[in-house]
Length: 318
Length: 249
Ligand SMILES: Cc1cc2nc3c(=O)[nH]c(=O)nc-3n(C[C@H](O)[C@H](O)[C@H](O)COP(=O)(O)OP(=O)(O)OC[C@H]3O[C@@H](n4cnc5c(N)ncnc54)[C@H](O)[C@@H]3O)c2cc1C
Ligand SMILES: Nc1ncnc2c1ncn2[C@@H]1O[C@H](COP(=O)(O)O)[C@@H](O)[C@H]1O
Image (cartoon, rainbow over all chains, first blue to last red; front, side, top):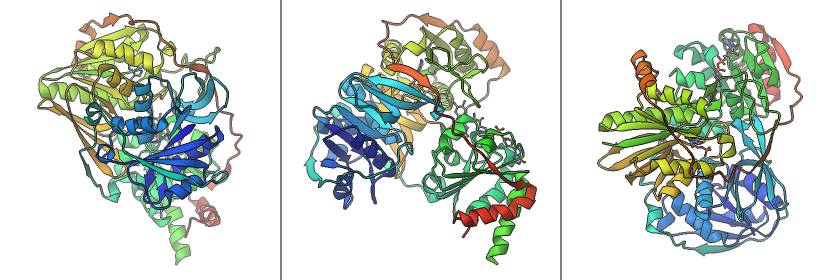
């Protein structure tokens, strides 16, 4: 059996979870899924479309609040004698998978992009922020792996009718010590969700020049109904808050259009924007990696080009 | 008084092109410098703050070759007072091996801080494995960490907002970049760091290894960039394009 740990939000299985399911379904059958916590309406049917035969739903006080160890205990319970456990390559997916691997004393492969079917299982995964791939062998069972976000196309497979099995995992006291005790909602301005789910992202890097140099890029993002994202130089200099950072140690974005302005395109930045569908780079240096890797480019000073674009958009809107 | 251990890993500071070694087992770093992960820089900052705030001490640790003393000294110059080198070639050590070796040193420390993931191998697991090896609770991906009254409080950016954790000492915490601003070394800090003797220990046992078969570079995406123009005159073509892509209205 192959077990997929699935994260949900109000709309059902999250995008990276669906991508992970797509990869899991290709690894063999039967495919099961485990959901811990909220089970949104329609998610059992949704998972069935990916070939999931059984949805294990963990309920009970022990897993009501998030805790890496408690949630991993639930996944472990559902895993039985699974040969492979797959999780999404999100912060929680990584955390739960690492707990599971540590509990079972088996290796874990993070950020997998492709998996073979042989024995020992061989996977390919992203390392060095996605600029290098590693082939890795996972000889132990179950093989525990997480699937890199936006590396596998979300694609439902041969649908089946999934059945729901609700269970209350046995969780030891020691596994309840580190768990969320309270959550403080933050307003939209303080979150990276807007950035990671935006269809258009306008980026700004060192080329912005100073903390006062973001007005035009912020305005462009607003005009396009998108979000502002920045490079690490910008956050380390304290020009913009860290939740706006794109890259290996920031957010991973996959918008339809990314417009990086004054960003050189270092591999750690590229790690966060490589899955953008179209990239339009605005940079004064035509040899900058961001320019050579982009789909489109404008060569020039962002402080002249971006206001001109804003003016043109406003002019056409009348 | 909290005794903090912070774990860092020396990694090549690659920015543009990455080259691999001939045996395809590592990144060819002959022409680049070395650094530590941004997460680990924040972990060092938090370790120093906790040590200072509680009147305790911060120890920095790495499993690496003699060269990694460079990164240990940087952490010493920032306010760590002891440094431990577990001398070994880190490329032969998998995350479970590293966790086991850190555990052998970490037992005496109240709090162990690590990065959320290493900048090179990105295994996302050494801290969690370490917690199991020590039988301690672990908070993962913390942006801020404080120690008071025998407990660690930490904040994590979760899907529904800022999640608060409170766990009793001793504990393990892995740190994400962004919650604190790492300080810069001072001249006196650098002088002090030079005088500290790095304690070298040997691994408990040989590694089981990382399961690595080989590294490869992703196929180069042949790319032809279409230059829309130069300077502000390009604005018209840019907006034409944005309209064509359906994002300008
Ligand atoms: C472990 C590690 C993790 C990292 N994680 C991240 C990460 O998550 N995200 C990230 O972004 N970086 C990260 N970095 C840093 C990364 O290596 C680069 O240093 C950083 O991305 C560079 O930011 P930048 O492009 O804004 O600045 P620079 O590299 O300085 O580039 C500035 C660019 O702006 C152009 N420019 C200058 N002035 C103008 C102007 N007036 N108009 C138009 N163009 C102009 C220049 O031609 C240049 O291309 C990480 C580094 C390490 C070692
Ligand atoms: N060789 C090492 N020496 C010391 N600490 C390490 C080493 N490898 C990993 N770590 C720590 O474990 C964290 C997570 O690493 P990883 O699980 O490999 O992604 C890193 O950010 C470091 O804090």
